[in-house]
Image (tube, rainbow, N blue to C red; front, side, top):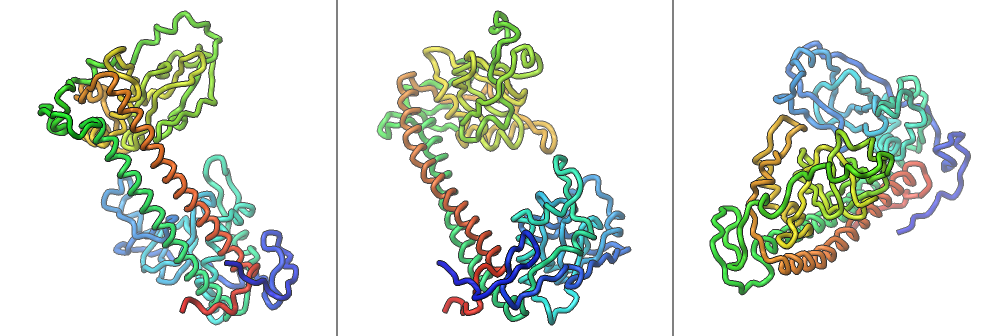
Length: 441
């Protein structure tokens, strides 16, 4: 839907704002809002945190390293206060608090000076647009490459903001509430579709690698609880009997030390089995301290959350047919005439493998890993090689269809999010005129 523009505009004198409708003011933040900093001095308040999803009450039960006495130094947040993470203009955010509580003294708490002049929701849209469109970024200070780009109080107070009449502020906010809710509903529908497609994809893979493609095949008890019955002509073996783990680097000892090979950090390996092969390095730089693999090897990430996400791939297209990568990979090489790479990769991305692997993880927090022993001794149903090829081909076709649908849904979400951002920006800066908007009947 297209919306009309205002009949007349004037120059705002503000680069990011451009022209504004006649009748609108442009006012510095300091005249509309006042910064608060009231330290609580006592315990017992809810601890509030600003997230991209809004202000949340923080769970402090398992907050290691944070002593309760520290919270007495936090600042009070009243219901209706604005709270801004001004210390991080890259990933921070701003919201209006629905809670009475305390928050970090590093956050900025501020409030409207005269509610008779300012509608809180209109200015929330303005401030949130400042983050989303990186408007505040130009006024920041710090070290952006370290993820610290803050908006000092002086720059905050001197920001020039659009200032429509109060009645228009309220209409714009109501319009955006309704239109963004409609867009958010469509996004949720797309997200639900994506979840269903991914569940169907996972179920299809798990069914094929445990039961095969022939629903009428005679079955037998596998002797493995999670695996259940398997086709009668399949064998059941531990992975170490059909593949080799972590092959030796001695295989590439005859390669010149200056010869370039593919290098794959963890981010170069996708959750969907894709590879980014743009990185190459001389072999003498990676031969020590990195994991070795060659074309046809199957890799699986062993560290959380990469393992749970199914990060791994069949290696192909490697420069010189070999590559090196992060030490957080387990490398599996199929035994010729017994197993094929594509089938083993399908085992690794199956729900059964990942769920059982999670129960084997050791370590703490974000450093949990699946031991090589789990992979080596994992029992699978092993069909004849020609059937492995058939299963891999069938799943490649079927999952590709689902992946296309997922991609189309993700594209739809991206377009809706762009539309949402544009609509907010256009409405709060007066690029569209919604004064006659009456809402949905």
